[in-house]
Each structure stands twice: as structure tokens, then as C-alpha cells.
Amino acid sequence: MIKRFFASGLTTLLVLSALWLFGFDKVFVSDENNHEQNLQKYIQTQRWILNNYVDEVEADQLFKDSLRGLVKAIDDTTFSIDGTPLDTTFTDLKISDFRESALRFERAYSYLSQNLPDLDMNKMTEKALKGMFTSLDPYTDYIDPRQSERVRENFAGRFQGIGVQFDIIADSITVISAISGGPSDQLGIRSGDRIISIDGDDAVGFSQEDVLNTLRGPKGSKVRVGIIRPGRSNVLNFDITRDDIPLYTIDTSYMLDDKTGYIKVNRFAETTYDEFMEAMEKLTDLGMEQLVLDMRYNPGGFLEQAVRMTSEFFPRGTKLVSTQSRHSRFNSEYNTRSNGKYQELPLIVMINEGSASGSEIVAGAVQDNDRGLVVGRRTFGKGLVQQQYELVDESFIRVTISRYYTPSGRLIQKPFHQGREEYSLEIVNRDRDASSDVENFISDLPDSLVYETKSGRTVYGGGGIVPDHIIQADTARSYVLGFMRQHNVGFDFVRNFLDENQEEFNAEWQDDFERFRTDFSWSDKHIDQFWTKMKDAGMVVTDTVETANYEDDKLYIHPDQIENDRWIPPAHTKAELARQIWSTNKFYIIYNDAFDTTLKQTMTLWDEVRRLKAYVDELQSGSSTAGR
Image (cartoon, helix red, strand yellow):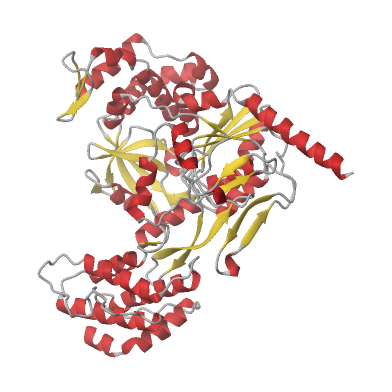
């Protein structure tokens, strides 16, 4: 098979490449090791990069990097590549064009597959493709078919399945919560249920991937799950009809006080704008007069959704962001097309080191246009735009096609030329003190990366958005909370409480969340039960240690540290109780009340927001007068 295939030569592959690239039907040749498909993937990948990458790139570099990636993946240390098509010394070798690159890779691939026939050439090809990207930016990458399906679901904002959030606890599939309105929720499946069988097969010991592969499926299909419920000895069998399950991009929205709305956006997917507008309308009905928009740990997503959401805060014709590339087809300028519904609403945008891409576009537009206050910590620094291209086996490559620039003209992409590892570690190596981080960042910036907002305030490019008002991270470390999460003590405690008290709890609290928020507290009896569970899980309280430490999966902790952290478990388990009774939305409300010190500091800054608006209004008034 392989000799017949390679005898056909490169011409066939190039013809097939042209057909597939221009949208003709895919052709699959019966090939036990997918050799033709693998080579086709290589050709497609290199073509997409050469034709679309944001900067000029040479076929020579792509070939050499891909061959290094291929060779590096060979586990056989006795296998010699010297003088073979796999030789990576590249003495006096200069690849002139794409055709020569493809031909040389075909020879290397053929030599490897014939001399090491037991190699998984599909995996080796993936290694070669990943190697091809090493000299490019960190976001140009390969996405395998299984991963690409997860990516599509994530950004489509929905998937098809039974509708549960789950975790693997003690080798059991444990339901964290049934997604509101989904098939499982309608059948009465609830948090704490343990799925022990799926379609009659034992599900104990399943991995996360196993669960996804068996519980997800096309809308309308059915699956039977066997469930053990705490307090019940018999197995409960449910026949569940799979359906569309929404993946919400807004974690929570609620009123912080009688006039301040709060919305937390976790990413930008196809549904984000609609979710945002629905949340804003509800908050407006509740009397919202000012808004905190929380973009912390938002990694971005669809640029168009970020722009649509941001547009609602500006008048028509306001520049929000632009993209630039060596290819004019990827150059764009995004201006608001109509007057935003909330253009007069006082606004604070919260950011941190986990805010990237789309969330940085939002923050940059608000800051550069002096529209509101940006608070928190310096953002991640991702200013590159990607486009996905499908390969022959339904995998994808993601290629950086342009850079985006904030309205003042700044590129906020941080440097990546020292390699992908250094790029990834940059955020870890930042000074933990947010003010020192900004001071160090600014001190190294050239004048060319210093910009001005519309009103003349100084802002910076070259490495994320520097907030207008810096708020330190909460650096307090709780060993108690960490141990509690690690061993699922809080979840189990709440589940046991509800198994014994749910009817009584619901009668008193279920219809009055706001009273629960302000008035509910655990009894001394229940708090004692919690600490007993912590000790059963391996927490040892002893004065023989000065600082807490882990040993043999046990936590050894001094009594004084227990006293300092004693308030934490009641607060965290109250939030978990809200999740299990109501929803994740309510979890965040209780959690923020108890733990979010950054949000509490943010709420003290509304006078600063008003001063900024007054300053901008005064400048605009002066400009109007001067123009008459």
C-alpha cells in the first residue's frame, strides 16, 4: 500500500490539495495508516500559513521546524537520521518554495514510516505540524478532531447531551448540578447523585473523557443512567432524552445595592451579546443606575461579540478597535453603528491578569474613549486575531491573521519572541504586587509605546491593559479552604445536609433567596459536623507545626491557623448550598459577598468615575466653545 501510494508522486497530492482548499468534496483513500491523509494535512497546513499568516513567513523555516518536530517525536534512541531525509543539520539547505518543502517532507515521512513501521504516523504527523508552529506566535496551533469539537461547542454556546455538571469523585461520576431546564433537571436528577451505569454498562472508574463520550450525543437520542442517591439503597434508573444544552457565558448578574448592577462575563461566544442584553434589561427593571462589568479571567473568544457588547456603551461612530495585517482582506476598523442603549450609564470595568483578547478589547475601548473607569490588575496581553481552517480529517489549525489595536492606536500584545515557554511563564513571573508590576512594566517601555486617551490621559501598549486604578490581589492563602476543596468536603457536607433537611430547608428558604443571602447561617451543630468531616478527610490539628504542611495526603495545621480561617468554611459552604438549591448564578452572589475583596474596593470608586466624566465633559465643552 505505502509503495503504491508514494509511487504516485507529489503531483496527485498537490492536485488534491487545490481541490480541497477551494471547497470541493473531500476524498478519502482507503489507507490503513492514513499516509495520504497525513501528507495532505501537512500540505494544507503549510498553505494556510503561507497564504494567511499576519507576517511574511518562509517555506524554508516552516519545513525545517516541522522536520525538527517530527524527529524530536521519535522515541527510538538507536535510530540514526544522519544523511537520511530526516537529517536536521540542514547544511547549506535552503528550501526555495512550498513545492520543494512538500516534496522533502514527503521523502522524510516515507523514510520514517518504512524504517520504523510500528510508529503511529498519525501522531507523528501531528508532532510535525506542531513543530511547524514553533517559530510563529503562541496562538497559531493545531487542534485535533476531538479537541476541535469541544472548541466548537464552547464558542457556539451550546452542546447536546443530558445537561449535568459533574466531577469524578472517588472514581464515581458525581453530579454537581443539573443544568436548569435541561433534560436531567426535568427528570429530577440532582446534585450529589452518583452515576454508576450508562446504558447498562458499569461507569465506575470512568475518566472525564469517557463521561463526555457516553453522555453527550445527538438531540433526540436516549441514554439510560443508573444513579445511586445519598440516603437511598436502591439504584434509580432514568431514561434521558438528550437535548440542546446552553453553555452560558455570563456567570451571574444581580444588584450589588439599590442602584449598582453587576455582570460577570466569562468569555465571548455566539450567545454572549444576547445574554448580556437580557441581563441588562433585568437589571434596569430592578433600578440599575450604574454598572460594574466584571471581565476578570475572561480569556476572550469571538471578536464580533465583544464589539457588539461594547457598542452599547457608546454613541454612534465611536471607534472601538481595529485590526491590521499584511493582507488587506484582514484589515478592519470597528466603529459603533448606532447609539448604544447604555451610553450614559456610569461604568466600571474590572480586569486582571486572566483578562485577555476580547476582554482587553472591551477595557481598551472604555479606557481610550474615557468612557468609564478600568480597575484591577494589568491584563494578560493578547492582541492577536486568529482564524480557524479545517483540515482533511476534521482537525483544525488556528492561524494568526492580524493584530488588533485599541482606539488610541496601541497594540497590547506582549512580546513572544523568546519562545512559547517563556511566553507562558511571563504571567507567573510577574511581581505579585500589582503596583510594582505596573511600575516595572512602565519603566521598561520605550516612548513609542506611550499613548494618550481622547482626553489626554496617559495609557500604555506593549503588554496588556494597565488599569486606571490598581487594586491588589487578595494574597491571603487558606490551607483550610484548599484542603476542603481538594477533598470535596464542602460539597459532601452540603449534600448530606440536604439529604437530611431539604424539605425543611425548602419550606423556609427556597422562595426567598434574598432573605437567605442576608439571614441564613449554619447552626453550631452543623459547623461541628463540618469540622468532623475535615478531620475524617485527613486534617490534623496540632501545635507541633508552626505553619501548615501536607504529608501523606494529610494536612497538619496549627490551632491558631484554624482560628484565623474558621470563618471561611461557613461562608464557602453557604455559597455551595446556594448552588445546589438555586443555581451557579446564586453561588456567585453568596461567594462575592463573603470573599471578593476586589469587588468591595471597586464599589468605593464611583466618585472617581464621576470625576472622570466631569473632566471629559469639561474638555468637550471647552472644545465646542473654541470651535464657535
